[in-house]
Image (tube, rainbow, N blue to C red; front, side, top):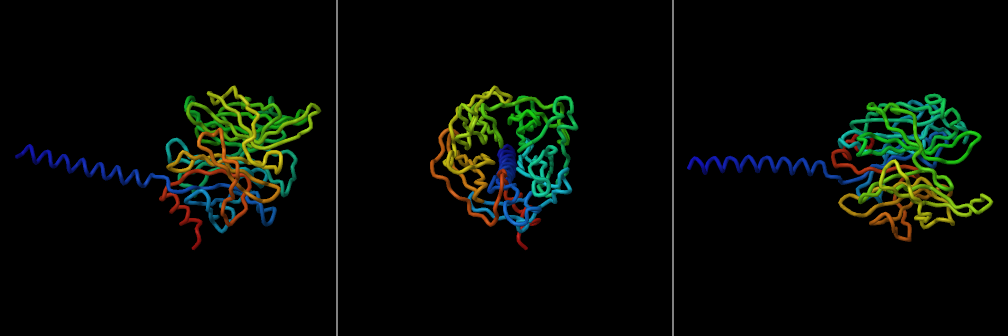
Length: 337
């Protein structure tokens, strides 16, 4: 009888533990999405600032904070503006990273920009910040940095560090080459001088890397030029590699339905929750539209783009999956009252 009672007690403990684990798993389950972007409408001086929107299906989006900036750009950047915000969930599941182009075209035009804004948070609400000025921080080899565009962060599982990669254009040299460097532990700068990551035949901007089945896929805004160097087509292209640092192989295909017709940029790809479907979204910057195409293998995408349903006009942004708890935190802070 004592043995039976002990077994029953043990079973009861197991049930409690399993129930607790199940409840925790349910709390940690991704149920929605967070979109970080900058705005393409309204007063120009207010457009180049960080904004958030949320969705439960990645199609219907609602701007947080009434589509006003969640952080004023002049408090986090050198230029007074930010563009191309990229958000990443850390490997620990509870730290979040944002990098953005430090640039304020509404005030300074398309001249040179100083570098990159780095941000870090453990709750999606309070963000620490720092910035990198490439020409000043690494003057020997990057003193001629002209544009430092569209930075993104990705975790390198081999190095076990966060890699920041970006497009660089140099004064009096030209070209659009992708460089990378590992972030320091505090996410306030680079560990060391950047190195070349990818140099597309005709240059690339707005690079976005994703991993699937042993292969790294690098999507980017690319183009095709004739023998005289004149651009004859542009759109979203891709390169692949089995190593995050390369070498990268271009396939010279175009993946967006608008290639050669209507210009797009700011491509960003993410995987849907509980699905094998990937969403490739992009910015139709000449028309104010933001659309997407989907794929199951990152090689073939549906041919007809679809429009998001939204109450804002985003420019080049990025998306992460979020839990119900995170959605609740975001809504409590910036949702409609």
